[in-house]
Image (tube, rainbow, N blue to C red; front, side, top):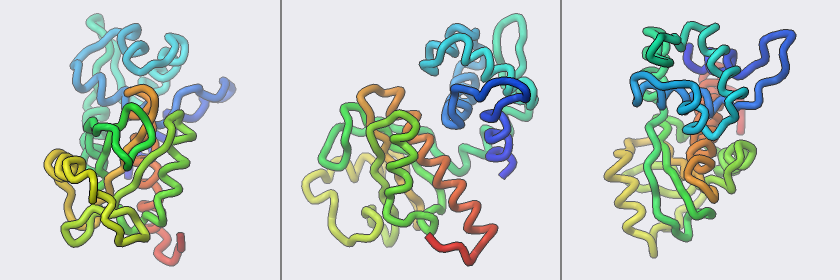
Length: 219
């Protein structure tokens, strides 16, 4: 996917500069924010992303270098390429929805994202949990949709036995199809839960792409 390649490039340092202090998940979040706002100033983008102004300035610089962002008198806008990249990403990873705290989650704030056709790239969900934690979240819950059922990978246990409203919320809002994956990022703040869910979803998408390139790769 071209969008994955571009995100990877944006999140790397520009030699001989320092390593960026933002994550690939912040790159996606920035694209979404600018798309939603149509135009936004650097200070507002910094505040919304939860990043320092210096880090946000570097993020913008990297995105402009790849022709994803344009800076006008009104503020930052998505370029034509930026809109194309975001569209490609959103065909694979959904926007997050808020999920109430439950036995399925580990934080006060929980946001769920859908990754299309990625069930074959899931082992037991530990990779997604670790990716979310590395991004600053408390953890992540991974659910696979198969045969009209949402279940944790590697088990047939009905994880929604006491939380049926959560299942109904995930189904109605995310509308999963066969072999889709739901990832719920959990944290003590909404932003950290969002970045955690995004990081885990992006990591899963990379695993999926890798397996398609190398079909004999095992978990």
